Image (cartoon, rainbow, N blue to C red):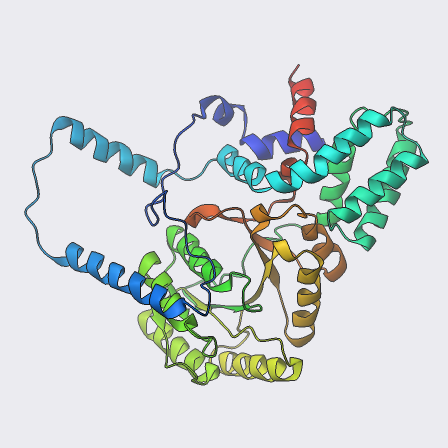
Length: 413
């Protein structure tokens, strides 16, 4: 299957789904539209903020548990309830997920792709000057030096092989080569190592403070729960003020149990308690939070090794995933963090947060190409379902949406 046919099928889910798609407001039962989801709470104000949310959640739960007389529903009200239930149960379509990537990469596209368009407009011919300017634009988007050099070699070869003389359709060739570089012949890069036959899966989250790690854990718990998995959280970040309370708020919001001890407790002891509780309750997946201090790499290594040792002692071959949360808005600094954590623990995947908030979304490619660690999830917004499995085709579509749409239209014609 050609790149464009494969791309069209991935983006739309097929012609039938594309024809049936309708514009509907996205429902977020967990969060009102006018109330943004909590990103990492500022340490100076965390206690008041968390306590207020806990009170609100408890009040809500109390109202739900208090038996009340059901009001009679009119025909219109009944119909509305049925429609809402149908919409809530409907899974996101391929097209709606594609649109999330397009919207989430808007800042990068407006910055990077507009410059590429200007470059294509100025250079009618594909020559060495064109390649040099394109190289500079890719570096500015934080694609990474090694990745850019690899891409430029592939582009030069492809241009020569196809005897391309002008810049018409050059964006589609760039897109195809970016996907090839990311995937490198591997498949199922975003699949989590979920254990079968009812065995407990342990996912260990690592990352520095301030990257949105706790928020991401909450969103992943929501995602896994919506897939029919039973989930439990372990509050292993016992050092940052308010981290335990924040995770407990997310547990209340998502509807999952959180195992925690007091602030300053031994994180390994929390993991031990959480594993025993998860086994006792027959939980499918345990997601473990950890401290994010990088002031001393030796301390970080010792702490993570201790946590890892306790987990693997209780469950052989666990943790089954070690996910590193990185803030996409930090650009090359995210790459430095990834290198540091890779040195101290066996990182199996990256969760790139706040991709919608940066104009340098090329960092996805830099991480993958330099460290050979797959980006398993990306944060494309503040809503609960805006944490999406990373997809290389949808990613390049988000970067070159307008140009690729024109190419796809040509295929249809």
